[in-house]
Image: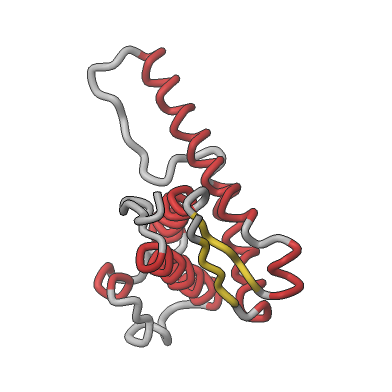
Amino acid sequence: MKRVEVRLSIAAVAPLLDIIKAVADELREHVAVPVALTGADAELASVWHEDLLQSQRDDCDRLLSLFDQEFFTEGVVAFDRDNAEAVLRASAALRLRLRSARLARMSDEALEALEADSVMDEIDEDEKRAFACFVFLDELQKIILKYLDPLSVDEDE
């Protein structure tokens, strides 16, 4: 099975994990993007919402599990086919929540360009940390898609 190991700076990433954990905790009770099932009965909508929340919780737990003892001793996180999709989904959900809850004052253009320079003087320290998390999660997604695209078929399989 293909496995990608990434060495990260513990000093740079550890403070971001506090924010990621806090946002993941928010996502335990709230879907990243609120949606409503129109035309569905209340019971079906409730079951669907709970399933969506549980899937989101599982994905966030999977992402957070990457930052285990190995990470804190060696600075390494590993991606493989077993965790790639969950990490992609969790990163997307976390970025959406960061966008709506903590980076609302930043323009979509600045976020899409991953450039805070234009507003750096206008945002506070909490927003700067949230932006750093946003960029970090974007980079994790790019690494997975570049080296371990879960939608592609391995030649070894």
